[in-house]
Image (cartoon, rainbow, N blue to C red):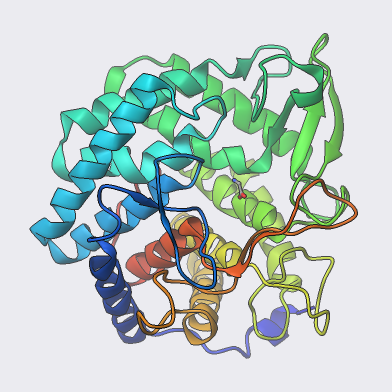
Length: 392
Ligand code: GLY
């Protein structure tokens, strides 16, 4: 547990240090291009090393996003060319609808194809990202006003949203901007209102998922999928809430989103352990011996750096400095320093952890994962340059 004054005792990362860690990350990404241009890293490493796989799951776009961040930082053609190859794969995937029966279109197509379109004007990327936005639109449930995360549309046992989906909404805002069709935007706004209205609990922690009645649309109950138990705060879910509120504020400038951001972020910060690397669920603190989820700190740092742009004076400095503290801790304790150690960027993530209170099996426990690598790199980029987010 932390207090505001204990948090202030931790060191922040300087711009120079962030630049050095970013240069290292770019080198590591460059070194992986041979293996991961025609193929993609699997969602998490095993024994510290990613194996190559097909473009499946919700996780491949983050690797492509790392390539685009590296391209932005260096201007090197090798990154642009590799990114373009991957964009072709994303077009093929959405045209053939391979593993696209879910809400994860924003995770997949924002750091890969929206990024490619913004940076290179690629028509292939634009086409792929718009098809992905259309695919996502099909999952909007009028009864309840939300995007159904998983499973057969309308099925009672899958009639729920999940907090992670806040990060899928920027794809829809982008789609409205490039097409002029406001339907994407309207549905995204409706989903965000529904989601933040039910997942944030009175104590400022968050539910991972929330069920609705498919007949009436009435909110029913919060249930975890990857957290320790229904009433606990899964640290990555809380981080998706932080970045999701910041990105929602970015679009709508609704002061309620800023207030919610403060709530979920302060809860996250107060529940950090002594080394600032979150346990996978905030049920755990030192010295639980439970695994960490470094990716949640990287996501939270990006959210804080985004929201600080819209805050004033001392409050903006507070959240910026807190993000710098998280990134400093990530660099010191989790950053991969050499290719011998790992072919990822950020150690000590947890994809899913088995517990009596969730249906998961252990997966990617104390490993790198593609989203942890990506958001770590995004946080470093945010610290060294005035970065225009891919997330709309
Ligand atoms: N969005 C899925 C996860 O965070 O594991």
